[in-house]
Length: 132
Image 1 (spheres, rainbow, N blue to C red):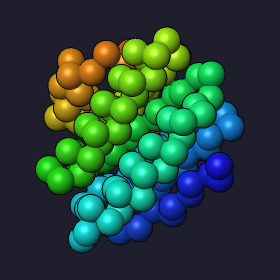
Image 2: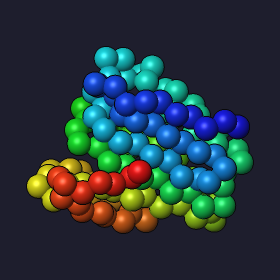
Image 3: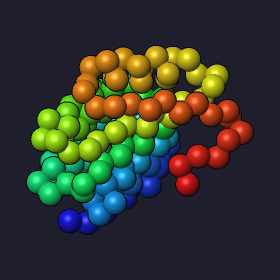
Image 4: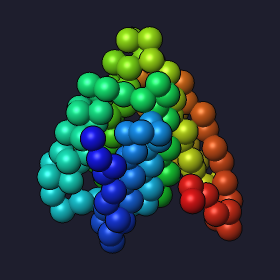
C-alpha cells in the first residue's frame, strides 16, 4: 500500500496518509468543489488501510476551516477509527486549533464526543509552526 499525498490547494487540505508509520495528516482548508470526489479518495484509501493497519494509528487534524460536506466526511473517517479501537488496535486523534479559534476547538470537542477514539487537543498561536 502506498502513501497517499495530496498537496493543499486553495479549497482542499494537505493530505498525507502513511500506512507504514500509521501517521495521517490533514491540514488546511476543506471546501472542495466536489467533496465526494476529494474525500472519496481519502476514505477509499483508509478502507484499504483498515485491512492491514499499522500497530498504532495517529490522525493529526489541523483545519482552519471546513464546510458541512467536509465535516461529514471527516466524521466518516473518525467512525472508521472506531473500528480500529473496537478491534483492539491503538488509534488516536490529535486535534490542532489556533488559540484564537474557539469554534474549531468546539468542533473537535463535538467529534471527540461522537467517537470512541482518544482525542488530544493541541492549541497553538498564529505564529507557531506545526505539523512539519
